Image 1 (cartoon, helix red, strand yellow):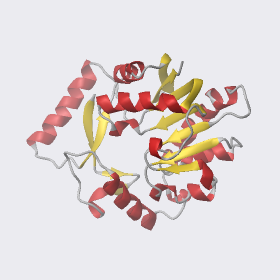
Image 2 (cartoon, helix red, strand yellow):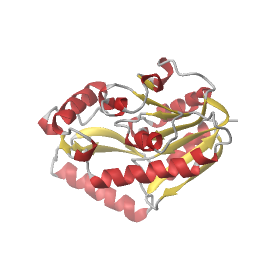
Image 3 (spheres, helix red, strand yellow):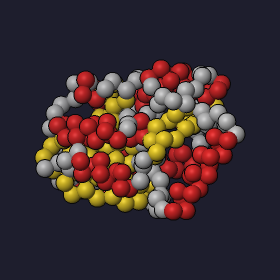
Length: 245
């Protein structure tokens, strides 16, 4: 596991709206400022990058085809944690899979999603403080949210989600911060870090943590899940899942 930094997100340069902090992971103040600026620039889904849409479509298709369609009962329930703008959830809901609840720490990113998904299926705030029902979900998925957690906190958080899952419910984590291990990748990463250090380059905002498949596997196993399985979606998007027993 290693730290990484960002100077922009969704095509928006941080320097235009906030002072970055290279030592502390972005928190609620940063994201509130980001989305305030975001909605000044972006007026609809159509203003976002086609490549971003394509990636999210790949992920939502994976969740639908590999998880939702195999649900044994029509009264299944799904929970998305840290849904952000909610394009994956929008895709799932628009395909007729309506039993999906969504969670985001703040309501600011949810401006567009609120126009589609009923209010009683939207939970804002820290997930365990929002009133979601325990032992209610067949599937909980987290897409590109793990990067904000350090090693200990990710394990604790994944473990805490088991109380929201039904027996044999699944926890699916899809990474936005996966990195390949190996000697060549290590050398490349070290050279980049050395260059930034020597040039005293402004690294930007500390964004979080990159993880290898070993890091993810350890986190899922140490959280007490069974049947842990990982792999790649479309060859380049990492996922890992575990089952509550």
